[in-house]
Image 1 (spheres, one colour):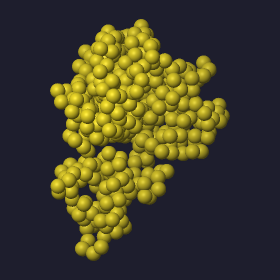
Image 2 (image 1 turned 90 degrees about the vertical axis):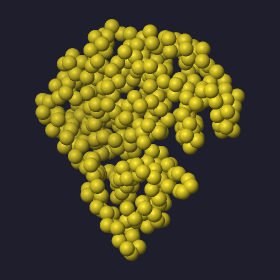
Image 3 (image 1 turned 180 degrees about the horizontal axis):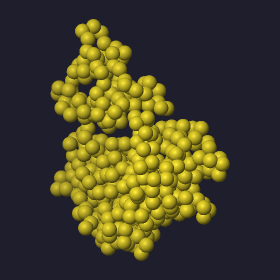
Image 4 (image 1 turned 120 degrees about the vertical axis):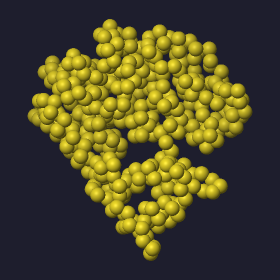
Length: 418
């Protein structure tokens, strides 16, 4: 059953989506991700939602945001109701559903990890419940030989045997081989697509797995969109954000989407441990990724060996346990950052990065209720100057929000990310 399209999703589609029926030209003036995020923050500050833009008071709200984006532009986008109805009819006929960042059904991992980099709209086909399971991301080159295809298919079967979801990009080569192996073995699969979602939804080879709720395709791009290099690069962060760990089977050296996505994960995002297939036939790209901080794939041959490898890697990567509580000592004298102790260190992060990430986790829990800056400083055991700096950083990241009269700080729940 296709989830009903929410009013928030309708508004976000009107503002950001091309609404192309087939392969025609998209509407001009669509809001970019940066622009939409700015609009979402503005709406949130006023305690509005995107749906309010197309509600009974929509004209008044549009007038208030017009200075930032141009009234004519916003009104023209919101007036595309007929195009939207045509597009929705086309998608529904292909069992394609739509969920927006403002909907409770949006994948929680994407909101928590990507925050404002999470796509405002996701199109999909298949069981949405699979998107909350985590799993192993398997990525690699499009151009592979028969031996590597067989290797990757067997890997997919091992992942399925371990009852873990396999996540990949649904492109030819490594992606499809891994997905095929997992599905053949009765496993669950997530395909994160950069193009041609419509084609995948209608493909006969996918029909049984979709109906059995073992396969789901998602895309941040119009279901009829063709291949685009930029889109292929951008979808990598979604693949990693949905996963518990990742394996690069084969990568080109310093080029291509596999290399770019792995480097971004290793050096900036750091959501999950990244493994790389090693050995004499692995290639220059794989060797270079190992030098940049990736882990050697231990070549598990059974589901239990796979579980053990992934569990060990996750334990090593975490700076603190998931249910961490920092050891704080609140003293009467002037507090300092040294009063805050961190249990362990995460590989590849500076002490300052570890400290900030840990503070972010703590404040996400502690600021469920609005609290003052003084309360936060005493709770953390640090100076007000340091507290203010951290609070400002977290506001920019969208983790917390500042309330006025009186000034208080409150954690922003995932539901508040519009």
